[in-house]
Length: 316
Image (cartoon, rainbow, N blue to C red; front, side, top):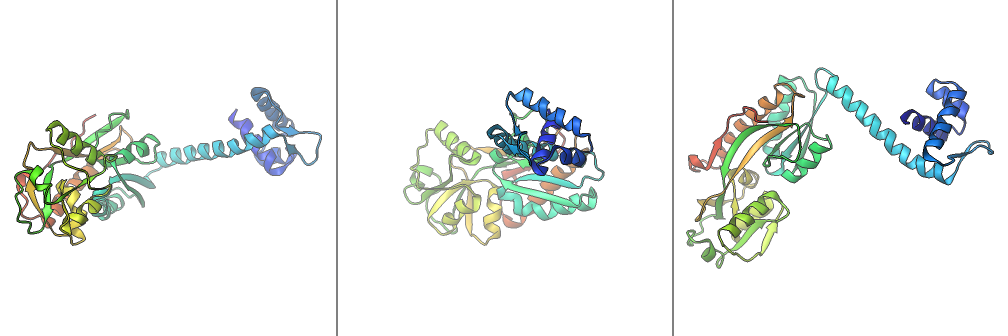
């Protein structure tokens, strides 16, 4: 069927069966047979053989639009297959949490090039939910994410870090931070939107604890959430890695332990099983190093128990 679609596309391009056959390196009779087979399989006529040069029927016009997409997809599969079989890997596609993408990009680029001989690194910054789509569509080879991604089969997981959520207030805020409900009467609660994994987790945790705080401001990126806090307008609940970008931009804030039962999140690297050798483990280890250095530099007074570096040993 696929070869018949190739023949059909070539006929449309050249408007002649003979020229299409020559383009594809086959005889004119073989090309004609492919066309007939395609028409029989679909139950429609695709070309008007009474006209010269050949003209498409309505069904032929509709099929040609789909044929272009099909042929492009197959060529993409061929490219991916060549890429996987090539040595060294010519391109590595990595999905990263948006909050740490800027921090990790330089170090991971160096690791890919110098250690693994990979000349090109393609990075995608987004949410953990974005990583599901990228991995499922094979548009990413691995992801540094905050979700286990159990909905995708055939992945190996490499733990990187476990970090606590913290209460974040404006720099020098002198109010009571021991009661979040009272705090919300003085400062607006700036949170991640419910559509983000972080926002959903925080909302669910507060709901379990029967803590109700009015919604006032929200965002889908950590620096967007931090900005109103740094300007003195509100407070937020964030983790150390979610603070890195805003601190790098010069935002000034104070951090405190949560005044209620704590909440943590895991950062891990996920990759497809047995496709990249020891590369995923090396990337996980380097990611842990870079994040630890960034947190230590940006939050030197942060208590040691606010984050724990996990072993990069894999878990299927």
